[in-house]
Length: 96
Image (cartoon, rainbow, N blue to C red):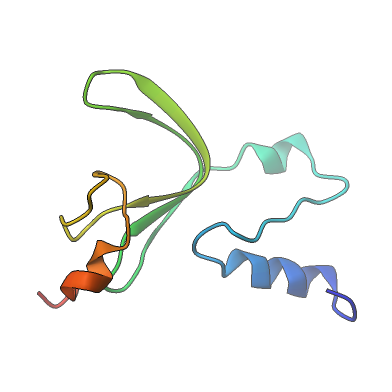
């Protein structure tokens, strides 16, 4: 981080698909905190929902998650509907 500017660091952190890297601004406004979730479909992988989301599980209970939620697209996950990386093991491809 030393020797770099804020914009460049933020850009690099936003490239992290798993939310292992995060940042916060010293003067973060309430406006920035209330962002609309972003959905990204990874090639040959899961759908990522970035931001605060509420979801209803099968039993009807509503849960909340803030960060990155990876949703399975291959159908092989042991923790459905969430991704556990099984797409790598089965060779899932968007071309299938």
